Length: 259
Image 1 (spheres, rainbow, N blue to C red):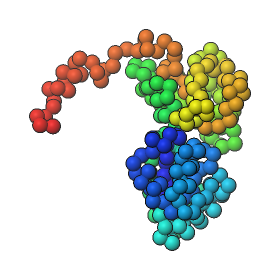
Image 2 (image 1 turned 30 degrees about the horizontal axis):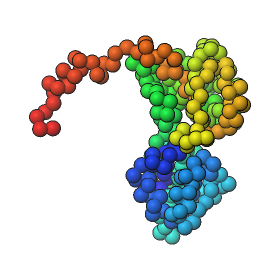
Image 3 (image 1 turned 180 degrees about the horizontal axis):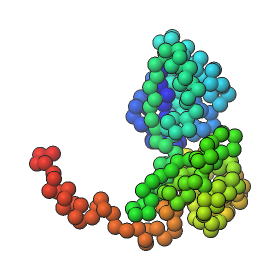
Image 4 (image 1 turned 120 degrees about the vertical axis):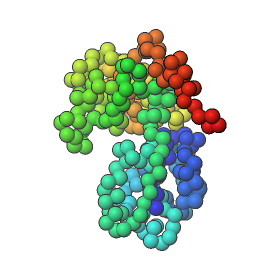
């Protein structure tokens, strides 16, 4: 039994292992509107039994997974991006463990990595940001006070997922951490889905609520804020230590002949 990440949306970004499972799956569960139409089509072309988990509870998901496993069917629960990040797995995993149902999680390309790639960004910036913080804005999902986004401002690159539905709260939290409304940010909607669905937007923090409304962005979006989103970043990035002449000299001197 598998829990599989199918990546951000582009079928060509599915891992080889995930693709092999899709081609052989018999009982398939998938995360509804979070998967691109092309990925859903691929699943439906191969699976004999199909369930949309957007309409199911944790108990129902676990029941289908267990039943498929007990019947000896290749069973898989397909997720967008990578299921190890905001995958909503714990309730189902708990039930599978209690029932003695073995499972394997197959990672996928995370949507925030795809978003950065589509914009042409490296999330880490030498001497300015060596930390990437993945978080979200809390509305219905409880969060500890120390995990509020405002506490992470200035500590690295911040990637916000599952937060585009509350743009006003995003602005409020980031401003509470010390950012101004003029801070440049990047919003990527449905990265790698292709036109006209995919949208890449550079704007100012204070413009976010207006942008979300104007572009009709309702979900599946990543917000990036940090040194990498500065317009002049390519003019101000210090030389890379990894690719400095001294580093290359050292690397060459440690190469073992024949390897």
